[in-house]
Image (cartoon, rainbow, N blue to C red; front, side, top):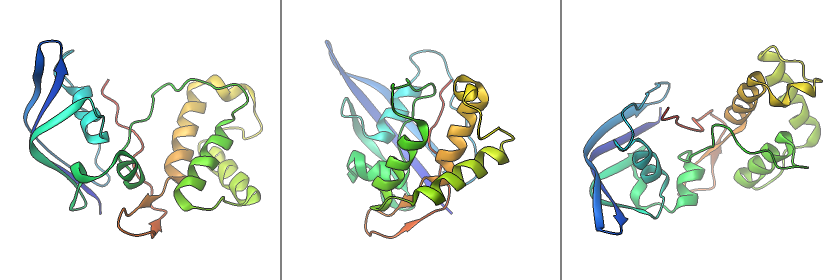
Length: 182
């Protein structure tokens, strides 16, 4: 079971007027399977929290800790955090002409595992995920629908791997791929 723990987190951001404190003493624990909605008015620190967890260089942690499964997240590089399953994904990603969602996800899976999944197995797994979501795997018109976005998230969750930053061992246990602050 994975646990993300944030304790007494204080974060500043550099502005024209110098370092401006944004987060002051945040405590949060998220266990596997839990869903948390971070809500608040504009400027209350929702995005700052997400960017800090992901390792954005614009934000400086001045006090506190962030751990994921007991490992110090603040000592991890951005790519180590992403491999551990802590990264931001766009809610409405921009389409890139010529890059299909399937190829993009397969490339991401290859980067995580160090080897590409076989085309046959990958295609079968994607079609199975779409069928489970009651989508027509052969439909090309679904690419811009909400159902398609849900399918892409499901496929990403199904195939994302959680890799330990201390070893090359990976598990295929689904991990969260994004946190919405809306």
